[in-house]
Image 1: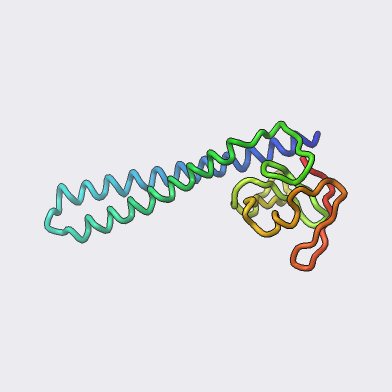
Image 2: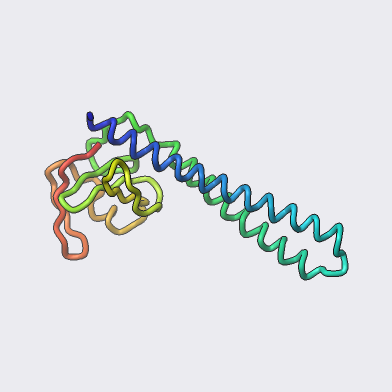
Length: 150
């Protein structure tokens, strides 16, 4: 499989996972809104119940907003572009691990391989930003060598 196909698979997995997260948050927000409305109709005297449902709805609305914003960040990545240096949108294979620079999503498994989806705001990104294939960097007193950038 060619290198850009690997990057495409990673990108698609990240995009799918974030779309699912946004949809789950949207569904939870809608359900909380409906539950709050039902409380209004059936139990007007119990304002505290309604307030609890509204707080849940607001919490899910914030989660949905954040998931939607992160989805837009992911969509700015061109998975068919090979990056020459470590930057936003790059898939980076080092001597220690495989990373995709996008949003802070954590560990994902793709075809039996572990990838770490990280944000450009994390310290390890700062340590390797701008590096090219063959370059080395240190993070937490551990040396990493950049094997491939996709």
